[in-house]
Length: 311
Image 1 (cartoon, rainbow, N blue to C red):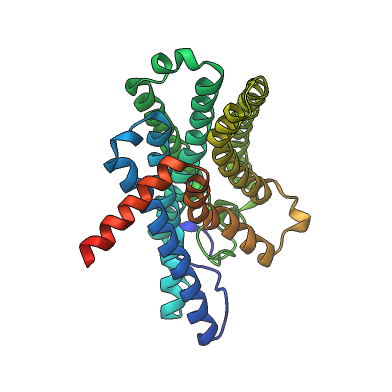
Image 2 (image 1 turned 90 degrees about the horizontal axis):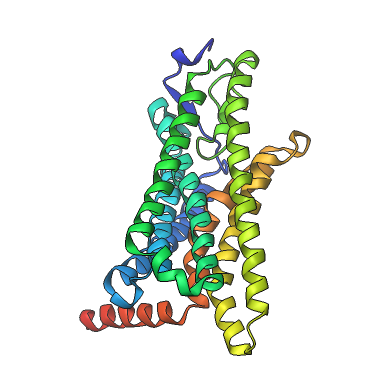
């Protein structure tokens, strides 16, 4: 294939070759996907239905769960379908849609995690000004800015990626369409343009990362000044779930996009992709509900209500 104009489909990486193992892969991914749907769906329903959770922290958590549902729904169902029907094909438009949607959801999620760090900073370091700085209008504006920035970032990367001539075939060495793997199919002369866009993205990534780190430095400094142990415990309970989610997101993303090419291999890239595209949307609801009494109480009432109605 001489260029991208002759492509009408891509071939995704197959996890396994035998039918029995394909069924195992399908069952495993189905379990993970259902767990992600259940966990994030419960959080969305709980925040929407319980007026006690209509606060900035839970408003942002509501948005985070929506993004997690979107990101895992972009990659996992197609992989399950390919395993079930014993195929590797994805259409050109489907591949472009996967690239755009995954970049959109992940970029928006990272921006939202940055906003949530600011929310925690104001709540702990500027508690007297919290109601004024984090009112409904401010929260909606910050969430809208996160979604808009993710959309523009995804549009930029998708447009650049698929405007580059692809000269190295159509086999994508990943179970979904991923920008680094598609760039491996490009002509060397055109790669530099996308590399420039990636540099811009990396600069924005580290800009948000530095903001989050500085926010938590000030948060932990303020928490350690709290005289009561109960007050410190409450403050840490507010921050640790968010910090755990940020750490999981940042570590996996940095490993995927910043690891040296010398250590790259199909199996390692596959594991890394699962870690950043599949694991976080599944475990984020668990992380946020483990140390959050209000959320756990609401989820228990919600589950009891559903079970009572079924009886």
